[in-house]
Length: 243
Image 1 (cartoon, rainbow, N blue to C red):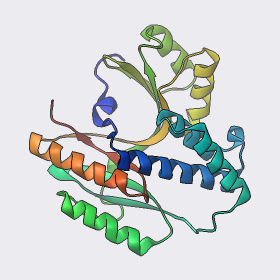
Image 2 (cartoon, one colour; image 1 turned 180 degrees about the horizontal axis):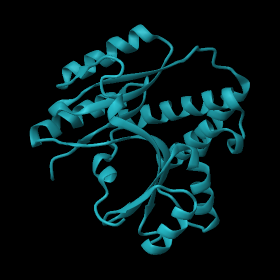
Image 3 (cartoon, rainbow, N blue to C red; image 1 turned 135 degrees about the vertical axis):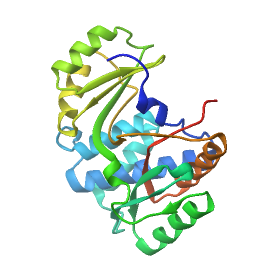
Image 4 (cartoon, rainbow, N blue to C red; image 1 turned 90 degrees about the horizontal axis):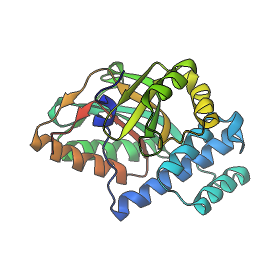
């Protein structure tokens, strides 16, 4: 289908300040290290590493940082015992938020996230309070600057098992079941179609349009979460007010 891309409307452009860029490098490097520890350094048989490397490329993480993270995982020089947790809560305007957490100190992280939520007009909820509003999906974004033939792209990805494709002024957005990530990724690579991003993410069933005031609050909340090293990913069902 063509038309306005709901998911592109929900995603926000990452802040460019140094604190957020530094935190993003730390988070992605940690994810690469843990993925290598758990499944080895070959992304072909390690989906977690493949996704982490894709995220690294999308966020312009340097090759040196990527290689250091891989070597750290191979050498198991990091003895920290990281725990994976999902936090759920509510943001400004009644929006729903889900957080992927990777921490070596659950109590520290819980206190920090609770403080961030309360400071910026939200509140941390109980497990399951908003998770039912999201579905895990494989999502690929193709910029129209690199490939602009919508009909051809639609045919290619649908034959590979994609569920849907939407378009906005700048890009095509392809969604598939998580188990079909490899098949869609493979056919795009075979056809020489570059992706701006390729990830397995949480997509909301419905969205909440924020007011101007709540949009400003949400921006500050997201920036604060981005700066926290323990927050790996943030998913939401918000739409920002029109600029």
